Structures are given as C-alpha cells and as structure tokens.
Length: 265
Image 1 (cartoon, rainbow, N blue to C red):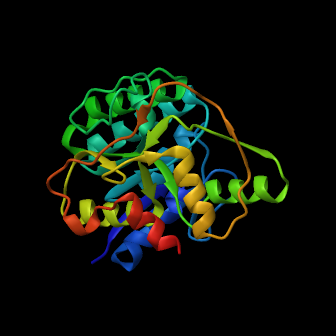
Image 2 (tube, rainbow, N blue to C red):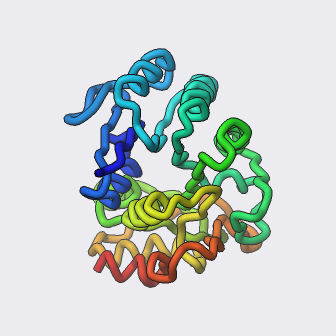
C-alpha cells in the first residue's frame, strides 16, 4: 500500500522536483499558496488552523514542506505542523538551504558542522531547523539545498531573459559554489523515505566550481547567448558550498558539477 504524503508547496519548483522523484511509489496530496492544485488544497502559511484541518482530514504518514512567505508566519505554521506530527508520530521532510552557512565562507560545510548564518534568510532557516528538531527529533528530515539548477529552472529562465534583453547579469566571480540538480532532490527524497532515514542531508554536488564559470557553461550547454556578466563581488576566493557526507546515501545518487552539466547537453 502506498504511503500518503502531504506536500506543502507542491507548486514550487522544488516541490515539483520531489513529485517527479517520488513518482507512483507514494500517494501525494499537494497544497499550493494561491490556488488549489489539481489533487490538493489552497493553503497559505498564514493559515495554521486550516493546516490542522487538512492534516486531520488526510492523515498523511509523511509531510514535506517546501514553502515561502513571511518568516514569522512560517515559524508559527511550522510549529503547528511539528506539534501535530509529534503527537501522531509522523515524519517531516523540511526543505532548507545552504544559506544557514552564509556567515562563514571560508570552506565548504558538511552536515556535521554547526550553522553560521549572517543573512536574515539564513538565520530564519537555522532557527526553524532548530525548533523543528527540538519537537520532532528522529521524526525530522532536513534537506539543505545549494542553488538548484535544471534545463528549465528559474535560474536558467533568468539567464535567457537577461541574454535576450541585453540586460546586465550580476554574478559572483570570486565564489566557488556547488550546485543542486533538480532531479537529485527527488531521488534523494525517495531513497531517504524508502529507507526510513532521518537527520540532516546536504543535497548537492561533491565538488565546486567558480560561479561565473558554471553560469557560462550552462549558457554553452543550453545554447544561450552569453549575457553581459557584471561582478557583484570582488576579492579573494570564498566558498558558498555544502558538501554531502552522509554515508547512508549510495554513490549512484551523488553528482559532480560535470555530471550536472552533462545532463543539460
């Protein structure tokens, strides 16, 4: 019997990537922020009471949260979600970000490192991770993502738009980054859920590349005329990268930057 998954934020790019990875192995009920999805509900982060009603009606075994919105509203929303899941002994997969390390760019970070956020976004995500962990403990899965790319992702659409309109494209030439391939998120989700794993997982390539070099290679792979790249930062080389180090993840789910680029050609 297929396990029921409630995917909150199912209309997001990351949400759609998860749906593709889980496929027919799970019964997926989705929520969307501003209009109901075909197989789900309309739900805003400002509606925690409605969330509880949906949870009680659907009684999912797993909830996946990939939502955006006001930070304070999100914190209240996720606390309500965590309290319900804790009481029902159900699991949560929470989508987080590499920005929890944006306060220290001296090296790539792994799942074993303590977050060091500086930005409001990174600090919020760190605080939400901490709150969820205290309530859910081993019922919690956290995916931290680097910049997510695919042939039709929002970042590619932005590159195409700036190229077509001859607009400056701001980039970070001194940043070494790793990236997350969209399909990899869904593959990770299926493996982690199938094998009842828990804890923090960094979903991204096992190596790094200079940010502007990767963007130029993306343009080459997808035959996009190079936009006018403008350096947003200068100075010594820094790292904005999160490396996967969980031994439970098999090698065939890991990717390098070259692997990502080869899938786009």
